[in-house]
Image (cartoon, rainbow, N blue to C red; front, side, top):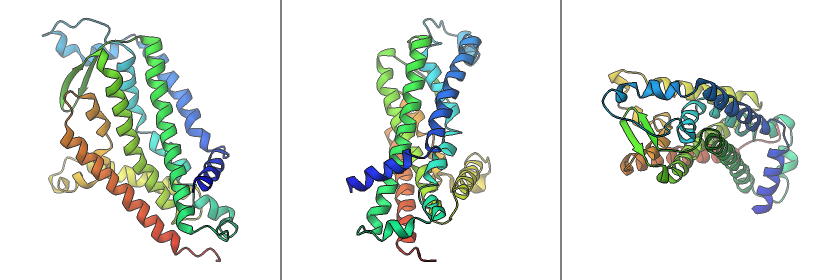
Length: 279
């Protein structure tokens, strides 16, 4: 299995499209940091203007941790497309190139072959999110320095101590990675249905867009299905920037996202085991 995984990773990272996500992130994050440097903290002051009238706020709040949080809030809209670009090509790319016949006649079961491809897809997703985390936090702290973080979201305001922030952000990126695995699993599943590399990207982003619209639709008739949509739980990483943690909400999101991973993997396996490679 390890040998299969090695070759699937080799094939994945031998394709130029695999590096589009890393190049995009490598360009976009420095651009965001440059804009924030020019902006000079006005964005943070705008967020805290209502608090400054009632509280005395001191310290370096325009720091690398705050910038990393801003980057996380913005990039997760675009990261799914970068993941789908690679995950959606894993099976459909083989079908387009006509290499299934050569690959599957080897004395390796289809299940092991598929699992190796799926693990390679998850490892690519892990690598992309890890690069985002290292660049956002590392460059942010290097340019803007450190300090406490005032985390503001729909649930309220939390002040996190500088000493506790490394663990909070490590947990946040771990949860973000877990949510991105669902995007990878969805694109991987769709790649088993089609035989071109563009279809999985378009279909994956369409499904995510529809789910997001339902998630944020302020209509009572869809409130009952929102907890079951994976897009409702995609921002679970924000729970890591709270103190104390809401473990019930985190566990619920982790379980729902994990269930989608298993469902997409199981559906892909069922399709691939019956796939006709001769036609």
